[in-house]
Length: 282
Length: 282
Image (cartoon, rainbow over the protein chains, first blue to last red):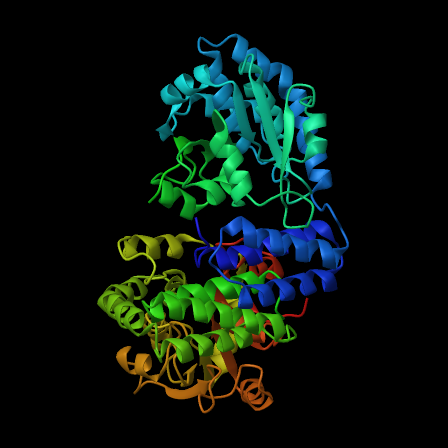
């Protein structure tokens, strides 16, 4: 998906939100907003939203001097999810369809935005998701492709959520898993540190995607990265950012909650729907 | 109130919303967003939000070539309000406290955003407002000042709403009313055309405030304009924009619904509350 004009004010909101997490210095917050406005004045919109988001977060890091603004949020989210892990495993064990339950839990991990509201009842929210139907449900097709696959590329989304991903990865028996995380901090996206915290480092191989900084890995749209995905037996992608970058790749399974109205409209679902679909061109 | 950092992404949203109303040409919409971003990159934030909003709308007018993007919205809103006028007068007539009912109707006119949702039941919404209590209620004080006043400055807000203002102005018996509207189009703010449409031109004298363009009148913060207000027997101000520009003038009565979270926080009320208060310093 390319940047839509609706994304442009949203980049400003992201800049302000992240600036306030990164620094308490209001002059630096203002400088971040001004530089983001300067970027949006001149940057090409012929790219995907995450590519501009990377540049916005580069501005936040540079001006605030805070290399990883969401570090505390990520630590908190991982801890909360790890505390839930035994209960999550129990949900899978007692299910008539453990794989489907694990897929639902993986999307539930995408829904729960720990950093935002810490007081809600997490288990209640997860049970609500387990009771929801996918607005698009590729489960039957996915089961068949999974049975044939030896090697699975799994594109992770956020910290915390990655513990839910572990529950699903546990159900991929006797497969080689290549877990793709960010090669450097960007918002609350999972990095190598979160792979370790989630207890996944001896269960998966890790590959990296970039965060807009040199040396942190290729962008999602990098031709060599795409070739790797195309050559894989199966690709499972979590979250909106990966969908925005890769939505036309019809060999990829996307698992996400539609939170952004543009993404929801593009997929043809409502905001708040959970979606399990292969990529497609519109 | 000075521009807060939260206003900055909001200016971008306003630019996009107005750009889409002003022109169907997506290249021009993009150009408007880019120029607004450039403005927000360099403009001083040491001013009130309406002063920057004026510059944003100047960009929209210049690039779209549309001098009055909200013209259709204003015509529609006036018509809807005029159709209601007999019913509004009836509400005042049957009230035990006609002045207070007219004040409530004037704030109800500020709540109903006709352009946004045309299908809702307007009378039901107005009756709901008539049943609401003001979060801050300066009515007793206002009554006393009104009794002594010979000359009232009435700062209007939007088209459509101005018909509700007429209902209140009808209750100001034997006073000279100076109705202040915009000297040129800006969003859906009332102008001289709306004064005429609302049937107010033979009931009031009219004065002008600027819309950011030369010759459209002084800004709210202009010293000579403020002197006029200070010299008046009574000043009644409608809506958020006037509050943002004049909130520290303690001789002004402000009548508004708190729609913006920053304004609500500044006043010390919740978003959605209706407010009748004199100006104050925080």
